[in-house]
Image (cartoon, rainbow, N blue to C red; front, side, top):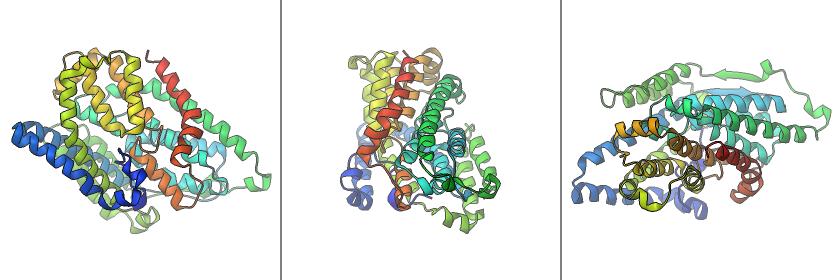
Length: 412
């Protein structure tokens, strides 16, 4: 699960694309010093040790969730044989859109990308990669804070857990249904081009097996731990404990079949350590200067949040515009009570920022962590995969952008 070459979860700058070999070898030395400089300034220059501790706890919570879901999903093997039909592909993508809210977009992507890929290998096309990323790796995870990293950051800041579902469910449903329909039309047309003899496949019960079900228990522990608030660090300890137990109790054969390794988690941990540190000055500045930016309407927030989420990582983008939106109303993103007040008194604005960050993360490979993972796993199997530019102009713009415009009409 997650080949070393596919670990691009923190690809929120251009270097992984311009010089991937240099990035792969030196990314800790290119990112961590920046975080150290900012942390040292806040500690020694501003004497803001309390703020550093708060951000540090937030970082540990974030990595505990992402890492534990990644490890536990690595112990689940969905084994499939035979050839998938458009109807069966539709079921898998639909299940993935729901599953993403339980195990995160990274977990759902890593569980389903290989069976989806192998079941379609006989007629695999580049659009399979694109729609899988649209639905499972991004848009599907908009129902819970566990689903997508931006929403979990909001939860850590004080957004009520079930506010996300109540505010976003109908946008999630409409976007997911439209994308599934578009996929089915494209997939059915391609499927019909093949001869009848090529369509012969094994029965579903002969092709579908799930192994490593003990990890369902560990997933339940992680989900339950997300609701734990006190004492400090108990939530994170439960998540890490579930991940450790999963790793040692899961079959080595399953880990081998999933190509499981810790490289993606290591890269995410290092990159987000730098991101969390270097975000502090930006968040502080936005909190005090939000009104001077001229960003006030839902449309402005929607496209600015979305545009930056597409070309940067959507998690820090979400947090930056959450800070901006709260600053317009004199609220502090560092105060959990203020964040809850913002969610309850200005739900339309928070809804706009949330859905935009999640959905626009699918516009490019670098918008969200699982995107590059899926791309590289498919490439590793030597199956057709869109290039970075091809993914945008051939799939994201004609298929995903109309869905994003529909979502925009729903928020203005």
